[in-house]
Length: 266
Image (cartoon, rainbow, N blue to C red; front, top):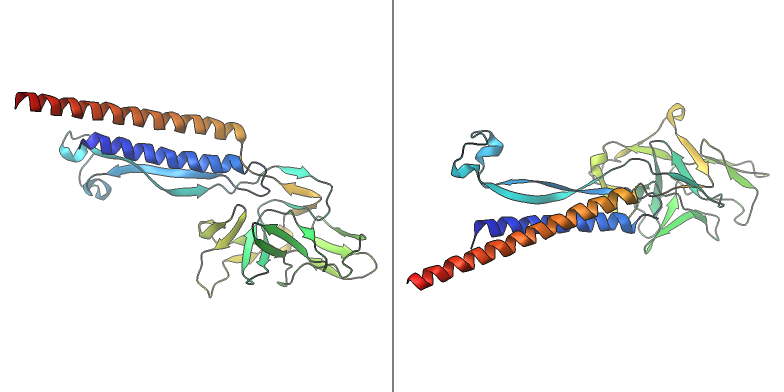
């Protein structure tokens, strides 16, 4: 089979993966706290001498033949999305570089998120539901943020992330943290992340008081995806798929023509 046919098919599959990544970004245009993902691709070398630097490019030898392109995964862009005002005081948006800490009610595991679409449940706990999971918002002591009087409407959250309930006298500080390394962030669902660190490590640190970013009650950080950018990227990727498919057809026809000529000569 033609070597070029393999190269073209690999290129088509890589661009299809890129299209799937873009489609997922577009599907989450309205998902609070969603971060854009980019498909990472690189040239494939047919021999190991290039990565080792033993042979330079452009020699014209057999070792100069490329191996096409292949996908090596996705990269998440953690830039802040636009902040939108809502009419829900339990909606929270972080205006700055920080993350909420939430705990899965089912197994007690802690995660990080920028999605602040919380609600107060019947027990007065600030919770959010994503998929089949239910998460509790945690304070700086690792305890759930809770209203002593669940049905109370006399509470507010200040810009420094402190929950005040009038007439009760108790205050709670919402935890804001920063990962030790963004490369350890593993997406769970669409806007929740766990840290891929050893069990004996926390993986994040509390942000000191003078450096804490602002928490805006009654606001949500929306998706960081730009629809115009994604549509342009989708068009480019789809045309790249079409080009690779056309090359596959051309090489298949060339191979078939060569075989027919050989048979006629025989």
